[in-house]
Length: 147
Image (cartoon, rainbow, N blue to C red; front, side, top):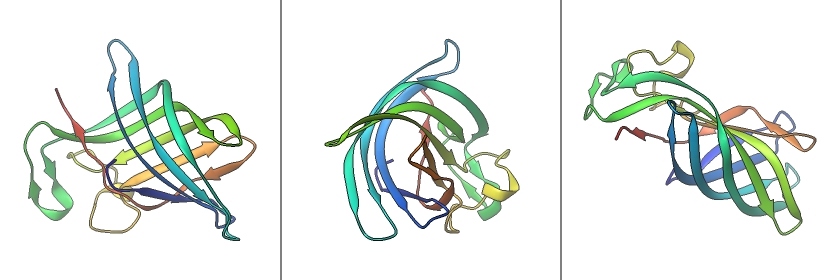
């Protein structure tokens, strides 16, 4: 996530997330970190970092193609839905949360997330229990590089 991936809560609050990491399904593991900026609908901001605590799950969509736009990509560029347990840390303290990253590469990308040229198709969602549920993808661009 080199470019900020933006998600929005139902109350208009937004969060912009960048970062990188690695994960494996067998054995189940994940590591990574990044930065975030959360902005309330009223304009107040909180910025900080996030760190991966563990892999929740990964649903692969496949590799090498984006059928909806007729794009052929290198075979090691893959897509899917990746959910991670994370810790968000800001000057005010640390809180647990979950980030879900969506990448629409692959022939099995679901119909609601199959065209990276349309806003909200790629990106993230983030849940910070007791604080906010950023469940609407606004913008983003992601890729999983198969090693």
